[in-house]
Length: 122
Image (cartoon, rainbow, N blue to C red; front, side):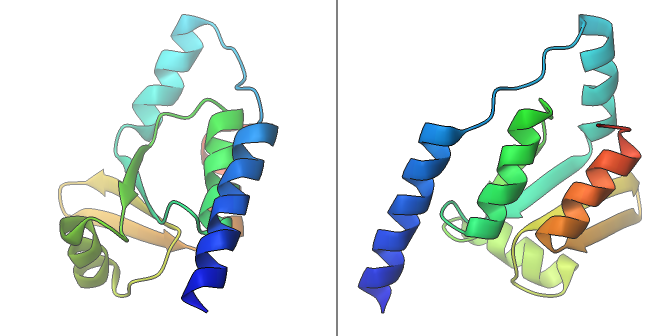
């Protein structure tokens, strides 16, 4: 099973690389405004997870500079996701709204919907 998962993961990554969307090009002022809104966000993800790939494709398509955190291979990020987010499940978007106000958003469709709504993307 592990071998099949490894092969499928590589196929998913290859397809993503070959068919990846081109990022939208914005004026500098507009991109700086988007970057300011996403500065306190981080995406906990696994490299070959199909749902994580789905979210990363949207990040690339909309030119969103959100920190990617590998919760599979980085023990610090894995522990942080489990301890603060409540479970070791990806993709998960960490949204820091203030010093003691952090929201953890799971599910790829919910993350994409949130980003489109919050950042007013088309």
